[in-house]
Image 1 (tube, one colour):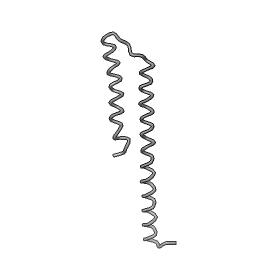
Image 2 (cartoon, helix red, strand yellow; image 1 turned 90 degrees about the vertical axis):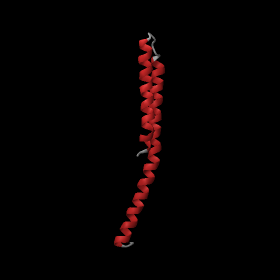
Image 3 (cartoon, helix red, strand yellow; image 1 turned 180 degrees about the horizontal axis):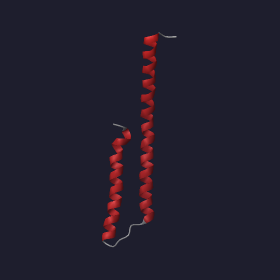
Image 4 (cartoon, rainbow, N blue to C red; image 1 turned 30 degrees about the vertical axis):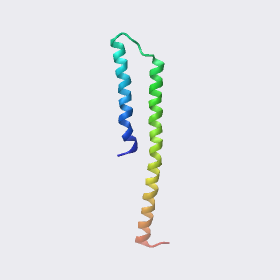
Length: 81
């Protein structure tokens, strides 16, 4: 499972909560501040971007290790140059 997938569910839940709050407010005749709603969605987007950046650290490390393994396997099969 990818790192970002672990947090995607929480991010999605937050988005659903904001939408639900908007629906409840509308039902009782209230109006949520659009600026505040945008701030929440902007924060959600920033969080999601940060999570992707964190995942890159792991992805890069895995790729580097995989490349080293490939190099070692090549050296074992064809001899070191």
